[in-house]
Length: 497
Image (cartoon, rainbow, N blue to C red; front, side, top):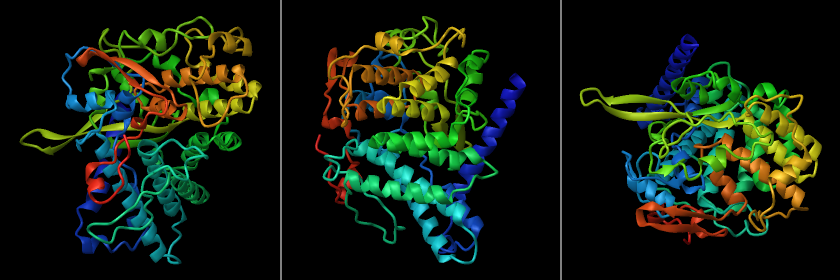
């Protein structure tokens, strides 16, 4: 096992270096040289840079109800950032893991995609560049989708035509200072859907470094999330069915992870060689070294409620928790440190991040089945999921039923208030169960924040530094991040907070 894990580390490091060097080589070219994008190879190099190096996990995780206020005893690279995210305040910082860093790096990725698309158009008829065009469109769609779901309100068909979104940029920048305006949330979603569907028709699977690029599977996984956010359940199921062929063998086998050491798990979790991962990104981030030691995270205040309760079969969960009472964590991230100054020993940390995986696709489909009241298929998906997350699971006796869901996941009035309505309490119980499973599965990854937004979940928690409770109301305007100061200075309308 140790030999296998060592090889995984070597392969991962090589892939990281390839991606970083490819992007840096392009960006270090003189403008005149960069304009000469005249071959499929150069187009592919451009598309490689169409994935944001910004990492959203710190800000999303700490803003969500996953985080508790722990003792202020940890060394953390940006203490104030943690405080700002925990209290949903505006952050003006622009270093790694901040909202501004994610914003700027994501728009840089969009610029790369737009330049690739413009160059493809110029080379039209000379080479078959459909695959590169498809990838550029998908990368552009995904980047805008993530931006609008941090800085705009969650999609709501009754308000999104007037809700402020983010600028949807479709042309390469031609001026040093470009003027942009904010599209509405509805406009952003329409443009994301257009790029998504067109890119999906063109995308081809790569033979090398496949999971670091959009593939057919990644495009379909993205589609399940996109239509889930829109509440289009038929489409969620349709796209999930294209890639879920044998869920039990595709999702993450946490029972097998229990045979790995802590360090082996950090290598395996977000690795491109992990079968359950569909799309992986290398992000410029300190999250791998800080996710377990921030002042805001998993502690004895919430660990039992999340990871010890709610197993339908009365058994233990396979989510092994490591650390001390004030610093519990699940090993998921490994850092690659790129030295930028050899003599000083300084550099940048890179954290591999899973953007899409089969577990999400399966739970997205289960949610869609529940919303369509197809509880037979929903239970099938949930039983497949639980089979790899429950210690000592016995497929003959450990079978989730409707009665178990209703009894174990009761309804709290008005706790979940999405833009669509529920049919009855049974349906809400199924959604409650799925949300509990999602919270466990994607802990530390920021996914919970998007569930808080789309279900209008209120948050109330203790803020240790000021010895008081802090609250985030269901429709709280602070659920939308503030537009970065530099963008506001160039004319973008700020969010009301």
